[in-house]
Length: 257
Image (tube, rainbow, N blue to C red):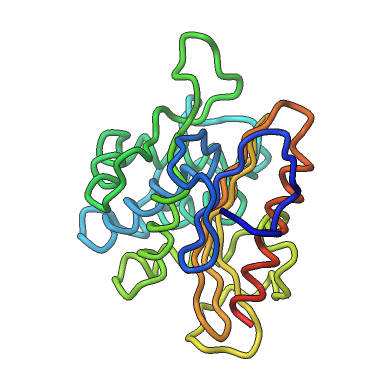
């Protein structure tokens, strides 16, 4: 359990897995919102390394790919992008349209088979991104556990070639409002540094939906710390959950100082 890191009362469930630092309810299966896109990015990177996907392969956007919510492609005119472009948009601005195009290209079954090959048991994509999500659709985009996602973050922070690609994509994430908010870092530093280093560096992927706040990432300073923090609360109670996630980030900042 956490000691002194979180408010005594939270408006929902906060699942935390920070190996070697913090742990709270790490095995609870929760909705992931856009954090589930990490499974897609991992499989795209593995495909690039295996040679059956190519970074410069063009992908035409179909009408069915377009989706509201986070991202830029619904505001841009181009209808053809490369696999690498779409992965970058998925990681940097959590682009829902780019995500749907990549899921269509790679295939949902393959993404989940890849997740299983990486040791994930209960962390899965259930569907493509939908705005709105109707009763006939799967109830959410993705589900998983903090423990499994922290382990995935540790794998991404390792030396495998595909993992270095994903870590570079995550370094471009534009959302540092949750766990990294109290970690003193340069949010525009998208280079991937060695360890140790003088000041903290962050690469992460977030997920936001009504009642859902999720963040998975890698922090490098005097040491490396990987984390997964998943929050679920009633609609309207998201900010207290975000504050608790920031408190976890403060503990991580102390651990890497």
